[in-house]
Length: 251
Image 1 (cartoon, rainbow, N blue to C red):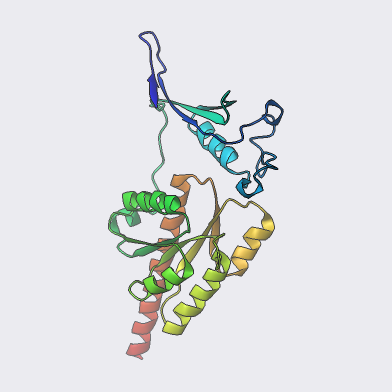
Image 2: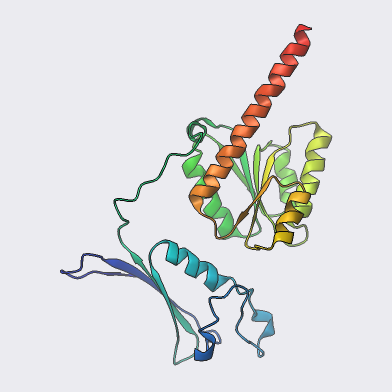
């Protein structure tokens, strides 16, 4: 990492450079390397073939932050990637308040994150703890771990990774609905998280019982607003249920 600034530079930047010892990228492949699901032809090591999402997602995130991404082959073999970002954001840019922002400080329920990636769990956990300070944030990496978690917690909102090994997010959502119904508890709001933009994938998620689907790479602010909306729905449903129970007891 390095900071790029000169005495006359009014737009200082900082750079992160990462070099690997992989197969490298041919000059002829550079035109396609930012296309989603495109992968380098790696006949020698087919087991190391990727999904073609790393570079497109990285490029999208860097562009959103007003930076640049450069990819070069290394003479000794491998690839060197450099991300350059502005040090300061534009002071004229402001953020509108969240709708229902009182929930950010007052919500003290449970929010669960289900994802088989440790990095994704850490990022989402940090994001939620920063915004929902009174909430309890719990995590699980598999359906089996989520079942154990449900013995001690009753989450109102579940962030569910759609593609996971063994039991994927759609099947886990169906099982979660059945598990919660068998216990007689209120159903949580399930938010699917995936990089798959196909309509049929979204439709399958909703058919499996998810309330909505968020696409990666997601905007953190948009995700927080969606969770706020789901928490508000949970509160409204609980209040209605209590009113109905109160009316029934008076009769």
